[in-house]
Image 1 (cartoon, helix red, strand yellow):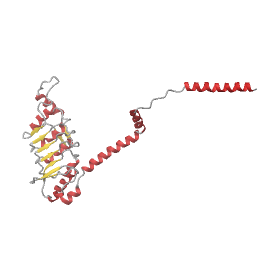
Image 2 (spheres, rainbow, N blue to C red; image 1 turned 180 degrees about the horizontal axis):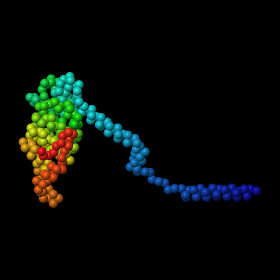
Image 3 (cartoon, rainbow, N blue to C red; image 1 turned 45 degrees about the vertical axis):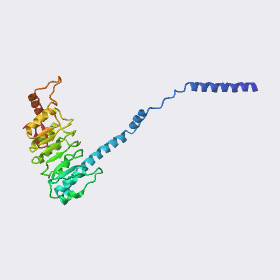
Image 4 (cartoon, rainbow, N blue to C red; image 1 turned 120 degrees about the vertical axis):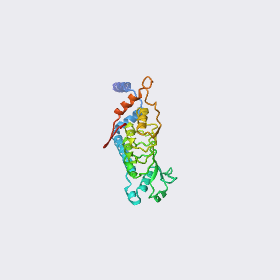
Length: 274
């Protein structure tokens, strides 16, 4: 009686061992953990809507900040006059200026703080403005359109200065003598075409304008429109070479460029030639 029972027990043990061995042999090969970039992509896919919302908010915030910085300082203008309001706007944008008849420049320090003594010059117009690397845009010009004695304006490296902005500078056509639009990435030949109204202009800096096609020809055309203006930052040879490296017929190229770049800005229709 004991012998058959022992045989059955051993048979059960062997059966269990066989099943365990088969399960062990059929177990899947362990998979290596995903790489860091794969984890990042997986996370972004799972959070796609969150990232999309974040980008949307970031774009909205940037637009809001830009609009706020360039808002019209109407309250300051009513309380202190046009000159003080323009001065306050320029300093708030971290720019600099000089009043007519004064040698001292007003500029904010590295922390954006500035001297409030400009309030004492309520009846003195601004003669020179340096807005280099600021976020000034088309709307921001509302703050100093009243400066009818502005002689010098520097817009070097302003990312929001575009063709629309340049088209509005005609308000200074009777006074502006120096203009710097170098390193303005959004300026094209269309915006430069509108500068032909600035008959008092004596110096114009066009250095490093990445969207300016055939800058040499543009300089020639601008010099025809502004014969008393010295244009720097652009060489005559720029854009005047063909694929073979030989100089093209300048007259033909000028004619083609004039036809190609007819510029329209709101109610004003302007071309590179009159």
